[in-house]
Image (cartoon, rainbow, N blue to C red; front, side, top):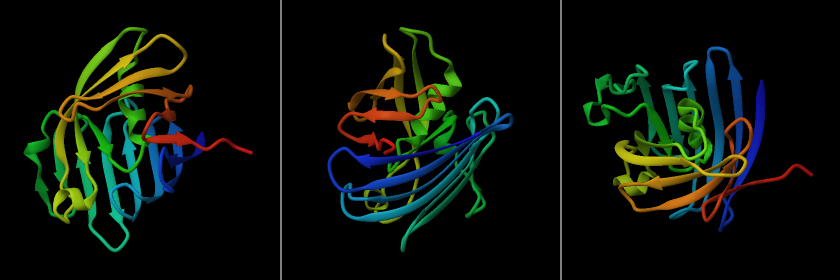
Length: 189
């Protein structure tokens, strides 16, 4: 089953178009983003998980800028497929978090199977904007916490390294509907 969603930046003019393909062997997320966070940028991403929603492959390409191609074993070990080298600095991270899209919030929400009140601290491979990485596109390991709150599809996201938090609303598939202060889904006419 494929679900198409579009998001816009909470403030600003940025837009994203994303196709989420759910299959027995995993999830594929593919999107195109034109954003205004910290300057103008355009990007295309595609990622693939296994049936347990563990990230297995990620490609991110910024228009006129850097390209990233990562592979993971689903157990927290990452490989830079473009440079042909292991990335031990990401060890322990099972999920990817791509800064320019709310789509990657779906991965831990689906993978961890939360009940009301459940909270999980996780390590993720975080992909920043190129400018924030000195012009390159170097992912880094960061700590995050997700907590399932009362209400239909409401989760508290906390960036433990940054101190940022937001209560995000997701649909039945785990795709973000509202991410206050960051993204909101466009409604179909």
